[in-house]
Image (tube, rainbow, N blue to C red):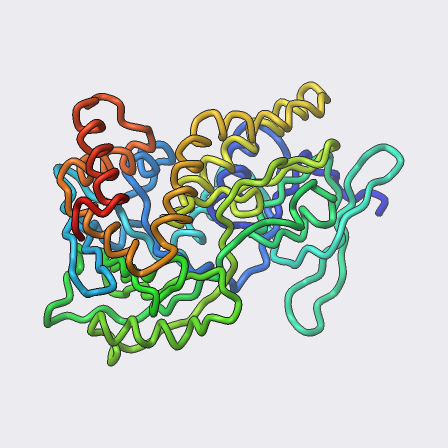
Length: 396
């Protein structure tokens, strides 16, 4: 390994989190290598709120669609329409979006390499040695050296396990599966509307989605029930949504975490980000904004670690994230456990979604990624309406 470069940071995983971290560190003047396995697209609805577009300078040409409303389906097929007032949610195709983020990281100075992470160790000086392999059946092994590592390699992170990050082996997640289909150009299909299906037959503990991406549409669902037939339920969802005959372009599946890990670093020089750290919102499954924020915070924490040599700097990534969003994740976790537990409760949940106060506060919080406290009277009204639904005084 004589003469082999020692990078300041190697980022494992080239999705939104890893690419964001690589861009930040490269722009800070650090030597960065972004290792991505290649040929892999995560199943994802592809929604990014205005806050994400603004904070991370997402260009208009990456927005495959602009959604202006959501239609929520109850088990009884009753619906709740939720229009977005004075705004939109951007929709991206992850295959194009992730590739663009990696290209931006390279333009910012990061080195890109395709390969599979297989393990890590440290030499006597604390330099991390990553054992990797080229992709393909005859891929050759190779080693990379770094002073620090960011693991942004998904819910079942190999980096987390190899580094022994506490709690990583107990991560809770749902299995997500979707099919990218050709969007209809006629009929009742609305290219500016998302559909969310809360039905036990579609998912016993999560939900199904139909998210338009312009020329294509993501149709999928998630469940933590390992015995649940995801593909069969997706076929049923496509029939319900009028997409049974649409051309299927690709199929993808992956685990999606629903709870942040209790620790994101290994106490030495490895830090997790994105799905590897568990930052996907419960109840909604939203992950792109939180992944990019996690990548940003990881990059900033690693920069301080490299500048000071203080391991405690790595812990700031999780502290800062939870300080801003921990309360939201806690509330969403409670919502998922309660409202998604039976079709009776799902029916009442969709009924709540018809309420204009709920819609306004929900969209305001989603678009800005902040808890809305500006309308206390609306919160009071929602509180008493929720009590009514929970006690059965209000009917679905």
